[in-house]
Length: 321
Image (cartoon, rainbow, N blue to C red; front, side, top):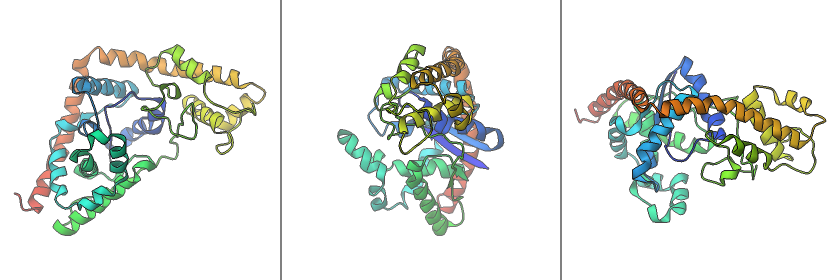
């Protein structure tokens, strides 16, 4: 199975990102043909600092390598991404782009930064996926509209120019953990929100303990999973289960007669222990940028080999070659 996924080099990676997507990548890369990229072209559609972008890219690459991802490439270094985006732009109705939720949301969030790139974000995203004739795309439900958009564009292209693209499908993991904010467990953990509500992979050990101890729970003082009525403790149980590989029912049994404070203390210590090895590996990669760049270069060559074949086919069918 051919799989594509990407992440923007913006903000720090938190445990929600790891459990929600990166951990899934680790399973996928062993048995599938995977193309994982750092989406720097998407990153520049919203406000960013050009002086730190490259540094952020290398930091993100080091993070992924430390977590066990073995092949990565930088989106902008495979020129076929932008070429295919331009080519399929010619068959995308502007009205369709204006209806996309992300454009509406980002336009409200960054009123001073509404640009054509933001409007065309879904086209580039579609090109990313279609370029590798991806069969599955591991994304959350919040990205469902983008995958539907990509399928629509693929269908339109195939009808107009002949069978070319695979119709990608969302890959939903049965084991994917949905991690919520520590301060407001009705919302997803976010790297752009309150830093106290989010545990970053590179947080100091004392910060991790403090954040877990300050996590919102409830007044019932019973450690049990109830996603509707006990969102806070249920979120912490999900985190504990994901990092310990223990079933939630077993954790509930272990803490049946214990306090929230005891449970939080143990969870904090578990996270400190589990993230310690990652931080050691991350620093090793970060201190050896030549190695990281070499991995990215190999990933680029591998991606370009597949991408160039697709572009050649597309250009021929569109009458450009």
